[in-house]
Length: 302
Image (cartoon, rainbow, N blue to C red; front, side, top):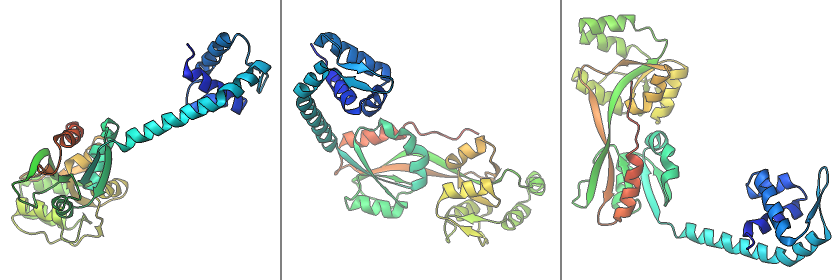
């Protein structure tokens, strides 16, 4: 029985006039293309091409076979393409909301493991959770519980710890002396005098860290306000300044010694990240598929 791929390879060689280009068109190796052609020639009972230095010239047998099969092969290829498109269109769609930094660092490496169509929206927890409540999103990676409802479930997927980071070349001699002396006033003064990166004008992460460790709000005027923690980390690695960021986002840069951890606080400042969804509006299959992606989250190791 003739393998359909033999005919497909034969058509490609005939139209390209070259074995290498035919293999490239079909996304197969040249040896495989040669095997397909040899198998078809054996089945047809003769040579289908004369091998020239730079070209494959069809023989009379090859020309006759081409005329007989080209229409059928192309029609079958169209049917196959149609079935593939239909199968893709029939895949369930999962609408996921996520912070950009979290998605890029934790979900992107796992995307090949998802079989559904994934439509992603980026934003902050408050806005994404509102879209979830309105039915515009199926699930949300949420850094806080902004909506309380008997239908909305929050499943913890990661605990992030906030740390102060700086460029690897920053001079920490005085700061470490303050730490050794356990002098919180001197520690705070040293930190305030640095050039700061902040996520937003309200100093959301900095304020939380300050309240936990100094029991007051920070008196800091950031030099840079950049609403992307990953960009802040990269900017510090390539330049200077300091900031407070999530440990899981900084992990790779710390491991590569591109930035240094200045301080993780006298008291650890932590936050739980959740997978949130409305159990009355989503199938368990969709929830489980996204949970499988988040189960492989990489925890900091430094």
